[in-house]
Length: 266
Ligand SMILES: C[S@@+](CC[C@H](N)C(=O)[O-])C[C@H]1O[C@@H](n2cnc3c(N)ncnc32)[C@H](O)[C@@H]1O
Image 1: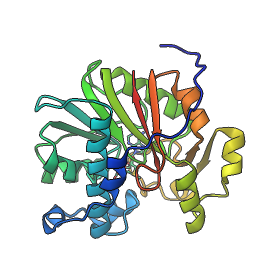
Image 2 (image 1 turned 90 degrees about the horizontal axis):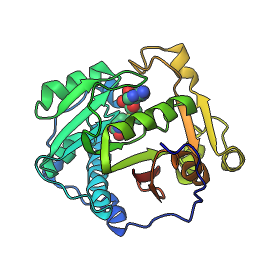
Image 3 (image 1 turned 135 degrees about the horizontal axis):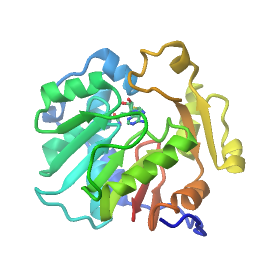
């Protein structure tokens, strides 16, 4: 793997179909899904079942649009992993729309138990806070992760990027969300930015702040055995640092509603 990078950020990528997906009108059918416990909803930051369905459905459509945009052709044999899937917010609606082999893993065994009980067709398993995963090299055609790199420190992020590259086939596509400028603004409006401002991020490139609730209440995020909090990424940092692992990096600003989506191939 190339360990030095001279890539520079050349601007955000606009994918109109992804913004359309975020405005998708939901049908009655979209709401007909299994209901996670309120504890499971809280752990992924979802207010209630309605928000769970609406955010998950829209993000599942964003995944489909972005994979298309990146030119990934899918067949029933294609394998897609939702890394840090929680209780299936995106996996559940995606399974209604994509005829591929879906996988999901998370450190939270209660979330995986929910998926196993309700969605036996999804290959779900509990994973560790640190790599590796028990998965063969180049196994997946695509991996996506929403709001996982938004919480991990820099060292863990680097080791997971290397691991996710290992298990994705060359030419496969990764869609990884991070907290960027827009998402930090939203957090600031809610008072959950932990004192981090975009000026700090412009200076530092990457900032991680431990969430004090995580230390006080180990039951809050089961399976999270290491540091956990708010991680904020500047696009220059992504291009420089993630450029060590990937050959293509495109950033969709606020592509996940608030968080930026990094589309990468290697
Ligand atoms: C904010 S939630 C997002 C869940 C899901 N991606 C979604 O969009 O609904 C973050 C998830 O990451 C999981 N997580 C935290 N650290 C992880 C790690 N090192 N490996 C895999 N999952 C992790 C948490 O258990 C939690 O389910």
